[in-house]
Image 1 (spheres, rainbow, N blue to C red):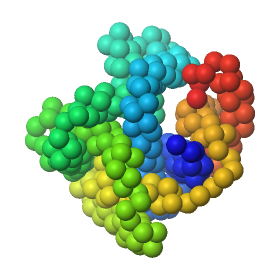
Image 2 (image 1 turned 90 degrees about the vertical axis):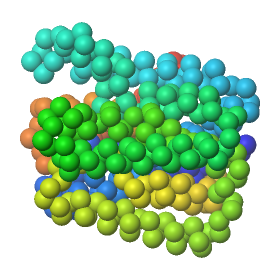
Image 3 (image 1 turned 180 degrees about the vertical axis):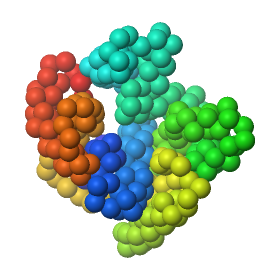
Length: 319
């Protein structure tokens, strides 16, 4: 399969969005603008990453490269968990975290690194069910995704506020944002798009129209949550994302770009994996606004990208 550089530029755009999420960009300028971006539009990033990787996972299956795919992903995760270990092995007080906390951090992933075990788990489930009934698998993926959405909403709106333990569980990120309820359904979408060439079954005009419609739905969904005083916390699982993310992916599949290629994808990966180092450092040692934090973290991540790409040429498991 020929490389579609448009998807590499999509990865880069999504990496920018992830930086915006973790820097809470625009919070100092407008709470509404910040919420509908950081907890709205930018939440498109991770679902699209899952879809892209599910799309290419199909190639690994038919090409007999599944074992090497799993090994590379685990090695990538292990490498970055080691790089970030000073941030999660030690407590904020400077001493070692408890063994249980260290174990949880390792298996769940430090902050944004949760995506890699999420992707590994999603791929494992998909590989296990790949030869099962496609209609039943689609039904399963749909039920799992909307179960995650339901858990997120019940938690954020404190539906179980009279049951402290249950309310706390429903407000834990890993309960709804995990490989099964979030990663697998989106990973499965990408796999199906490739296997059945679904992106070619919708015209460009219809694709653009539907992207606009569901973008409006996502912004509306986030605005409603912003406006409701009963809501607490941000959102990862939105109803509209399961529709919008595949449509955005399909749209970029229709765009033909013949430059940039893998180098752009490596820059996107560099920004995604390295940016939290700068977020943590800048927040700790500099008193700057969220918007400036976002731009400075992005610039720092871009600046370090060539170095990481050079290292990756030798190590192979950095990006």
